Image (cartoon, rainbow, N blue to C red):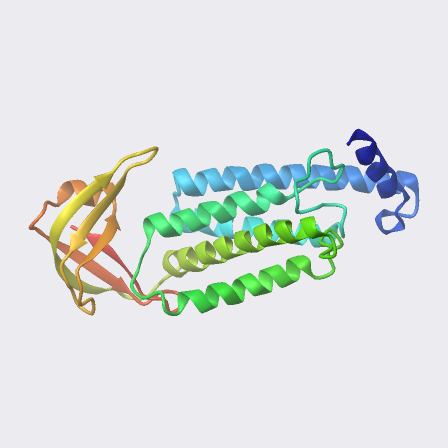
Length: 252
């Protein structure tokens, strides 16, 4: 493996795409490595911020959305000198973590925080965003050679990450950037439940309200959970969504 890594280093310093001289290629390689390291650290910090303490919420969400986009830009700027795949003993700096961690943070925030009224419009938008991101990522990227079987698995992993990113970015931005006026409704709390683990989650089972014609279990904020009891009435604020995806929040 060490010999293979050494051979890869030699190929980098012989590749005219990375500079016209060995010294220029070495300088470009150092720049790429430094850029990848900074990007991975920034993305990691932003992901931790947005997942554990997203305040102010809209700023944390926008920062998480921008990190994978910035990673994608760096991949294109360095034209193959930075890779997406994080291979052991590879001399190429990788941006896998800058792409992966914020994407997972966004997806988890969307799953934990948001009450989406209707997912009908969500899935085709997610698939469209994923297709565009995957196309930009794979197009002209020499790293992905589908003639080699092992690249197929890597490609599938990257596509799954783009789907998670698209889902989280779409829903989080739809709610965080929404400026529509809320329609107010009231719903009786039929049950309340708390699940514990590494983090605690809180849920109300609500009777039908407004346009919702069925009983539904929804996640709620800890403060709301503590303030309201079974049998009491909660307020439901219904929003149109920044991208036309309706959603709602539960308040005392």
